[in-house]
Length: 282
Ligand SMILES: Cc1cc2nc3c(=O)[nH]c(=O)nc-3n(C[C@H](O)[C@H](O)[C@H](O)COP(=O)(O)OP(=O)(O)OC[C@H]3O[C@@H](n4cnc5c(N)ncnc54)[C@H](O)[C@@H]3O)c2cc1C
Image (tube, rainbow, N blue to C red):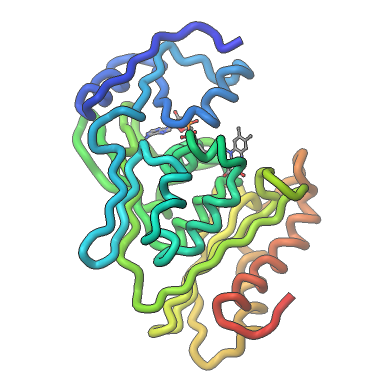
């Protein structure tokens, strides 16, 4: 049972913000792939769903003159994956998006919805954290921008204020020759949420490595940048694995025990580092 609610499908942003802000207990509906599960289970019972998939301007998927990327809140994961500039400039993000569920589900699911759902296991979160991405927001008090690093407030909680809608994800222009990668451990082959996920981005010109991980703390975590100049891939992998474990606070749940997560997380980190820096690691 889905419960009873009203449904609105505005076509402009001001109307969407007004509807969402003026109705207590309203929810934004994007792809619905998380929200409908919540509605069916009864964990969430909003009085109004504001569908943003037809809102003007939220379907944009633009590359700026310097290579920065804007992904509107109505853009599906498949649209992102079919976008050549994304695959070319941000392969780690493409790997993360491709790891989510099935083709059919990716036709509905959005990038912004993955962040707004604020699951610790959200696969796009680490991939966007290492790219320095931010979320554009519109609300009753105007527009603002929240870095993804400041977007998560806890399990299923974001720093969006009441009445605010995420309008897009903005990825800054990549540093020259930027390399990025994403790896995910799941219980089974095929589609499954992450037991642990790790993303990395390396700027070869400066030697700075950014790493982020998910499903091993209440929110996805971005580590402090790691300087790799003059270090072997193995030494960087060891340092990165130690930093990751120090920042992790995994729990045991239906997908894995905390002990298993602590064991698998450094393995993923070393593999991502090896992929980005070259050299063997397991
Ligand atoms: C079978 C299945 C497999 C899945 N596998 C994975 C997986 O492997 N990895 C993974 O990370 N996720 C997975 N998911 C979760 C889900 O598909 C993703 O999180 C998806 O990206 C959510 O996007 P959506 O557009 O469907 O969000 P919705 O369900 O529409 O919304 C999710 C939440 O965010 C809010 N919201 C959405 N858009 C906005 C906005 N613009 N502004 C403010 N709030 C907003 C909604 O109100 C809701 O609370 C899976 C889900 C299912 C059902």
